[in-house]
Image: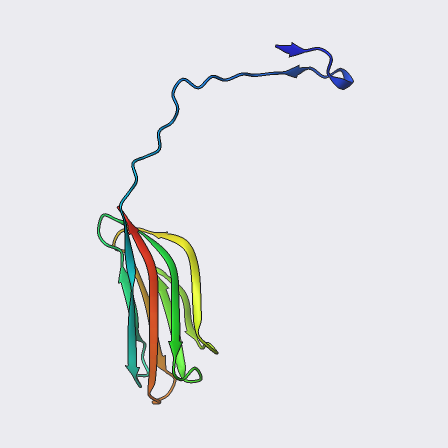
Length: 136
């Protein structure tokens, strides 16, 4: 139905749509807590795994955050790999760090790994945690 009395000689048209069926939400998926907490202690100069999480087969992973802390920030070098992407490499931090990923979706069997090493032969103790969930 057109309205003739629109300003400046324009013509307004009003549309009405009718919904015959209301959409139904999908059935809720099962959600499972996931992630890991682990520690590396040593003085290796090459990268050593601190903590690792692999998304379970036939599920979708949601990465929430990765945290890291060490007893010697001046000597600890970090590397973070999410799936096939190196998020950072050869990074030193000045204090405890938590990196949020805001529900980053990962495919089944994707791997998140946090590495560290000492920049000389000084002993270090490094802790890492991965907070995530799996859906499916």
